[in-house]
Length: 262
Image 1: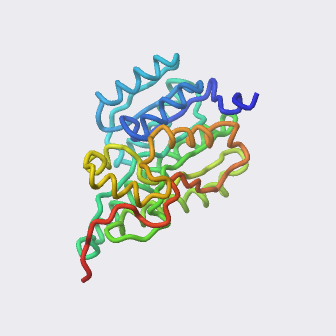
Image 2: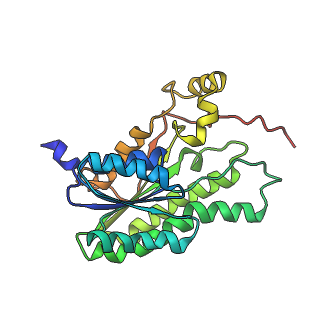
């Protein structure tokens, strides 16, 4: 049956930024489809809640609270998967993000921090994961990028540059790691996560964003998680080096910070 292609029974996944939002939804989706998971973020309490949902789905979760801006910490998650489960098949590079800023207040250090948190962390984890994936059947790497990696808007210089870099890193890594490991990215549009909590709880701001989105709504984390599962499973087995746009049809940013002309 076609739905069997979306199963990941017996596979092991590492998901970063898994305590809430897209990371949590992706973790639960992979578990419901049959995977055991190693999950990491800063906040142990949030991870424990996600782990409980994984266990309710009949799978096992290993919780690793960590500062994932530390490349040593993020790299060690691959070792944890191997030690706890004996294999590693799926990596979801979800951790990332950068607070919007004006051009003149985006100094070099700020730009480098954005690149480090969104790209260097993904590279560090994948670099550690690949040898373990190759010990088995290969695997799949899924990066959570952003629509702002391809769209231009004021205030997004550091964030958009870093997410564009992550998406292109995925294209290049896919060539290096083919044919046994697939690498893809998801360009996410406005999604109801904690990063947008202030906006989605403001009726006026939310209505403006929704009206600026062709599908007239904000995305749900489970919709991104469904795409993660597609790319991680046999259903996406002929897809590599691609950026899948899950953004409600956006062709321009739908959140304007009202930054003035210089």
